[in-house]
Amino acid sequence: MKSPNSRIGRSAKTGRFVLTSARGEKISAVEGMKLSPRMAKVLNQGARHGLSGDERRSLIKEEIRKKK
Image (cartoon, rainbow, N blue to C red):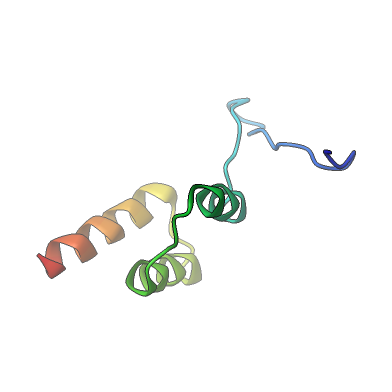
């Protein structure tokens, strides 16, 4: 049963739903997916530097290209 305090956040600017990393992890866990240590490191690095979503995506793409 849902908690009465569980609310799905919406962006004040666009009105769209916001998927946080914590909620994303919960969804992935239900699907049986787990973040690799390599990608966890990249995502943590982006969060530490306060990068925007586009900047984090670029960082991930760079990391993937390096390993190929």
